[in-house]
Length: 136
Length: 173
Image 1: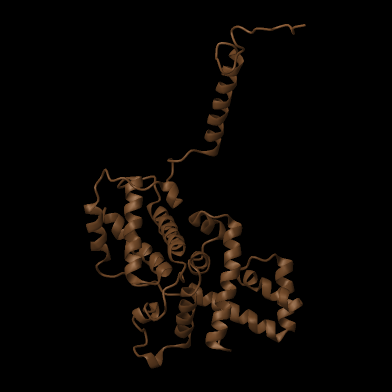
Image 2 (image 1 turned 30 degrees about the vertical axis):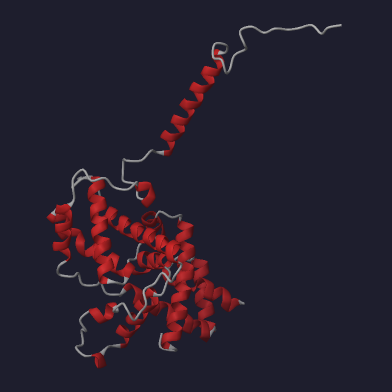
């Protein structure tokens, strides 16, 4: 059970994301449990190995290919909607506060039109309302 | 334009190659990302962090493509090891011969193979946080996900990596 807790947190310990108390607990447990000490060493090596994965060499023709592609690009070419990509560029999207303000303005306009009352056929009373007394 | 290419092509290619594990896909991804950023942001906007936006576009275009592929084909997202030459195979061997590859290089080769076996979203998280050493918040911003999603994927991805390496190397790691 304790070893399971240790193994759930071991990557966070290696990353240095645990608090002082948690880190000390991990170190005490690793000192007392050879299996978890080996596990910790393995995680440290894995973490170091990931950091040292080499950067791949750039193919010699990549820059030429990019230059060619950018030259071919028409300036007025349009792109697919950025929302489809999930990519929004700075200054090109509505802030949430602006969207909220616009919504409030629309709501205020619609309620003020309702307040004008009769005159708008769908919202006012009919011009001639006929009340009939029941016969008999 | 040449200045942008000279300055950012290597970074962009490195990110794209690590994501795609394939030279031609990486070059295609880099080209698309350059075109998108330049189309959207103009040839050069001094206020724009071109490299940062390029990186975001590379990751997001890649993940969108992968999502599209999985919807269309419902086949494995990953390219097989047989059809994709390993990164380590493409790099010059610093020691000169296969026999003299160090244990460290073997670990890196195995790590790279294990990374290639991860689902695309998990691989993106591992690349940003564990390989490029970015914070969770920065990775979340690049990927346009909540920080919790990045943390959850990292948790699963690291355990998958660890399990893969246990299978590969026994007691060595």
